[in-house]
Every structure is written in structure tokens, then in C-alpha cells.
Image (cartoon, rainbow, N blue to C red; front, top):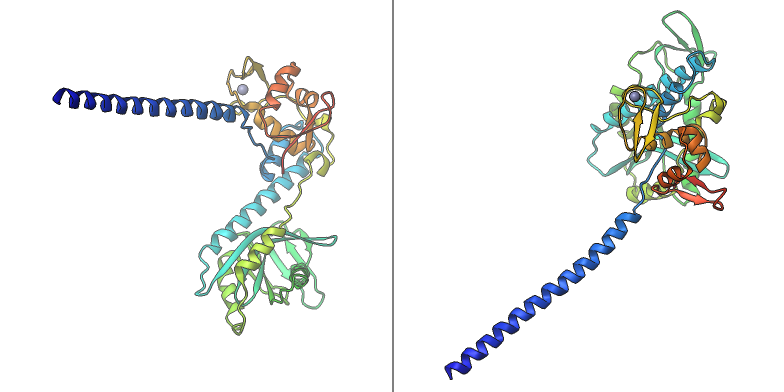
Length: 360
Ligand SMILES: [Zn+2]
């Protein structure tokens, strides 16, 4: 009997061991299978790529132009305006973090909406239960004068030079009308208000245009409270999330044209080659699977990534193998093909006329 029990025990132990072994085998097989799928997936995951941020694009665009280029000064001025504008919008958003209401509210930034052929860009939209407030940021420094009698709005700089500006109230009123109409078409009847925010530190108002509230960044939240306070509570408070989702779903991003086109600069004027972040030159050469700078010896295996971003920001929204090689001063079509195939591009055209475009 004992012998039988021992035998049975051994058998069940063996069965258990066998079961564990089979489970292990099964898991291993499935792990191996998963691993092979994973390996395949890793091999097919393609790198995404986008344009350079606008200010950065202008900076590196200027860097590829000859020092004596006749458009250089104008572009440097554009770069200054662009970066100051971006800085101003950032300041406005940062200040808004201190905005608070007891009731629900939402904010959207940098929104583009289209109504037929009319496209409007909004720097900021504050959606509350009582109304929507458009935030319009202006980046103008120096002394600002408004003449109520003539309606002229003038900037005087430190050298006494006069610049005539558009009265910002007109632009804001146009945007208010646009948004009211746009929402009205979607059966949303809503009060739309506006606030103009001057973001430059060195901005001095001697007088302000009437017809719309105008403030500086540090005053923005108080001005927003002042707009909201006198408004009677709406018997049917606005459905903030619904409006927010509707606007987000219809947001039409600002389409940037390549800088050569925007500033009418010939492609031939641009210095060719792959940029070296160490010595700021364009002498990176492809050596095996790396880029090596012949000027300073620095290495960067992904230097082509920046070159591609530059090409799409400066020259065209698509490129061919040949154009890529010409821009990067790269000899081998096979190497170029291998690099381009790593990216998640929208590829179109036959083999010979194949072009690669950034995905939306
Ligand atoms: Zn270098």
C-alpha cells in the first residue's frame, strides 16, 4: 500500500512537473512569438518629424544666408518681432494661470477658425458660464498715443521716429463678430467680449483707443474679472465643455509656408550642407552610419534630422531623394534612401519621382 501511495505520489509529482514544464514551454513559445512580433514592430516603427518652431526656423534660415545678403537685415527684424511675439503670448498664458473663478471655465490658445473663405486666428479664448472673452495680444513697445479726434494710433520710438499703427479695437471687433456668427451657425447663442493685452514691458500708454478694454499683461486678470462681474448670471449657463470641444474639433492650424517662399529668397542663396551644432558650420560628412564634421571633428549620427527639418521649413513641403542629397551634400542615393525610409513620411510618386512629405 505504501509502495502504491509512493508510486501515485511520484506520478502526481511527475505530472505536476510535466504540467509546469509544459506551461513554461508554452509561455516561452508565446514569449518568443511576442518577442518576434515586438522585434518586427520595432523595426517598422518610423520616426516622426515636424517643422522647426517658427522663430527657430527664421534664426537658422538667416544662418544659411551669406553675411552680405540684401534681405538679412529685414529678416533679422522679422526674427526679432517673431520671437518677441512668441514671448508675449507665453507671458499672457503664464499670467492666466493665476486666473480663478468659482464657477467652471476653460481657456483655449492659438485657435484658427474658418467661416467660408474667412479665416480668423485667436490668441486666446476664455470660455465661462456667462460669456466667451477673446484675448488679443499685441507686442508693441515704446510710447503709444491715440488721438480720439482723428482716430489715429501712433508709436513714437526713443529716437523720436513715428510709426502709424492700426487701431487694435477694429481688429478685435471684427473677431468678436466672426466668433458670434460662427457659433450662431452652430446654434449657440452666446455673449462674446474682448480684451486687448499689450505684452511688451517697454510699452507706455499716453492715451488709449476707446471702444474696447486695453491693458498690459500684469493687469489682464483684473480686466477679465471686470468684464465678467457686471454681467448678470445666465439663466442657462453656457455648456463650457461642449463649446470647447466644438472649437477644438474645428480648429484649423495656421499653415506655414516655406521661408524661401514667404520672404522671396532664392533657394540658390542658401548655404548647403548638414549643420554642425558644435562649430556652427555646414561641413558634416556621412561616414559609415554617422555624420562627422570635417571642420571640428564632432560626430552626430542624427544630424540629418535637423537638416530635414530645415529643408521642410525653408524650401518645400516635400522633397525627393535627389533634393535631399543636394541640400545635405550627400553623394550616395542608397544612403539617402536608407535615411529617408526611417521616417514616417507620406510617400507619393513612382520609384523615380518619389517624394516624401511630413504627415499632418
Ligand atoms: Zn563642426
